[in-house]
Length: 419
Ligand SMILES: CC(=O)N[C@H]1[C@@H](OP(=O)(O)OP(=O)(O)OC[C@H]2O[C@@H](n3ccc(=O)[nH]c3=O)[C@H](O)[C@@H]2O)O[C@H](CO)[C@@H](O)[C@@H]1O
Ligand SMILES: C=C(OP(=O)(O)O)C(=O)O
Image (cartoon, rainbow, N blue to C red; front, side, top):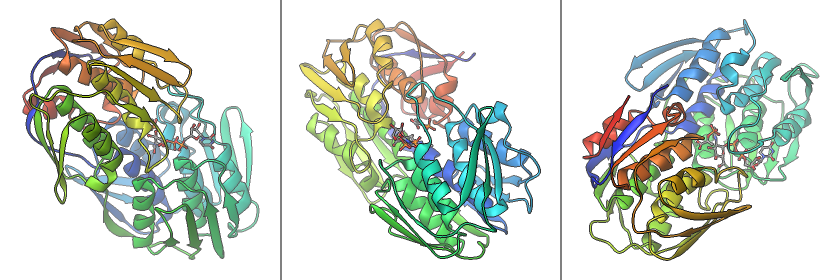
């Protein structure tokens, strides 16, 4: 298994271009199954999660072709030739987003459950509630969800989500675009990736309104055509570079970002005394020589502080003088990275959903292991800040969500290699 080896102590300086959003890409690639004609997607990141979902869709009969470095063409099959294979599905939580589009387009689906994962239990009850309300018959057989439409197609309905789940909002939205009549989904997630999915579906002829608010209305249409669409930039990749720049007291200009999507993070970095300058589609982080201040963070659904940036902030705060507190409200197991940071000298106490971080003067490089994608990103940031050499194992987690991470960091002056 690959490792990343980082020699710490080099401030990041220069420009970096942010790739397309992982979470939007995964939803849009599943949503592309709803279209009867060819779909061309631009700004698709070259990450392992995308490669896996493409392999799953390919096995089911879709034709996928890369047209350029980050542009791909996808033509859905007229009939699904095979079920989503478990050996691929288990590697990717987001494969559960195949359920809605497959039921809507083909009237049947058989998707293995990806199971729990390192960051929490991650049930699918809200996805099921919405799909059943639309008219799906779902059963759980030997770890797979077997589904079919009770009648010829879905019928518009009203669904209230007990929690604004990103995946449930996306799955139900995708299932409802071909339903007969109107579907109203209340208390939906408002993440930028939801808005991107709605814009994408609308560009193919769907009628989705309200994405980005807490109520989405969908007027069903008989079919979706093909089209060309550019995916939004990855706010979490951008955020990771912002925190890495701050942690190494560097000076980095991030290009291809939507600053509004990063507002919850920018506000916290400013509170920590980091200079964040927003351009139209860029963010400049200036942290040379700053005296960083301790801060408190609570993760929340968007527009609150994103859980996907929590671990990276823990790494940054581990050397900020004073006491910082992080409350994790979304995923119960997202503090596992604290144990690895402690091995590098951090002083962190975890009590249930709260982590108390007492800033130490410096971190010391050592051997650590990523337990999930963002834990891996946090360890990369810690390695960049630390004295000496850090060796990060289980780097396949990092490859799930960061395109060319060593190249991008080395270009900014880091000293990082894969072994
Ligand atoms: C591929 C993708 O887009 N992944 C993102 C998506 O994950 P994902 O869509 O899985 O996250 P959700 O928003 O669904 O999960 C949020 C919370 O709701 C709970 N829940 C969810 C569904 C359900 O049916 N029942 C239930 O109880 C989960 O256990 C969790 O505690 O949003 C998360 C929260 O912003 C991000 O961290 C992930 O990066
Ligand atoms: C939790 C994440 O992703 P996923 O939902 O795909 O596991 C993440 O991107 O940090």
